[in-house]
Length: 63
Picture 1 (cartoon, rainbow, N blue to C red):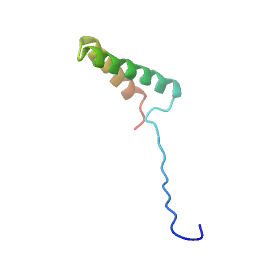
Picture 2: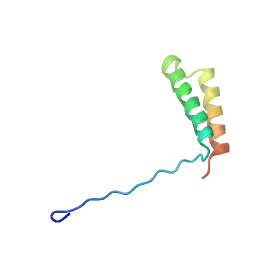
Picture 3: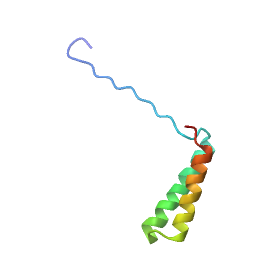
Picture 4: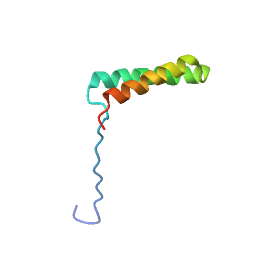
């Protein structure tokens, strides 16, 4: 740049879950969880899959 200003933004993203296969499982569970909620609202199935998602995230997550 010879004139004016240069603006730079630097960022990075770090996942809470290291293993790509574990992240994929969590992604799939969350996708199904959202679909159930969108279709039927808060049901027993939604609660169960939400609990499983949260437990796996807690187990696999690095904080």
